[in-house]
Amino acid sequence: MDPKKIFKTILVWLPSAIITLFFIPNALDKILHPSEMNKIITNSTILVIAGIFLLIATALFLYNRTIVIGTILLAFYMTLIVCIHMYKGKPYEVAILIVMATIFAAYIRSPFTFQQKRNY
Image (cartoon, rainbow, N blue to C red; front, side, top):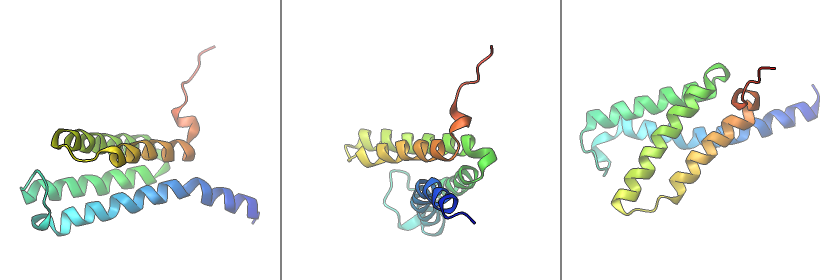
């Protein structure tokens, strides 16, 4: 194999891997330890559902054919987290960066998906 192609593939997938390394542990923590989390929502059932939602959205994000749906779901989830952090007076800058990084990672992997189709 061509080393340039391997290097390019690694660089293209690196942002997505970093995003995945953020969302997967977060989802597993919500699923496995919902009663130990000090969150606004104390109902463990809702936290488990949110964890399952994150796992599904991350899987959709990683699969190339459903990258747009996964990106929308992950960005929507993190946008809600940004709103909650702003409401509670917590730092929200990192959550905004995660939203931007999620969209950026999807664009790096599939730039043609995000371009507008032109009718000439």
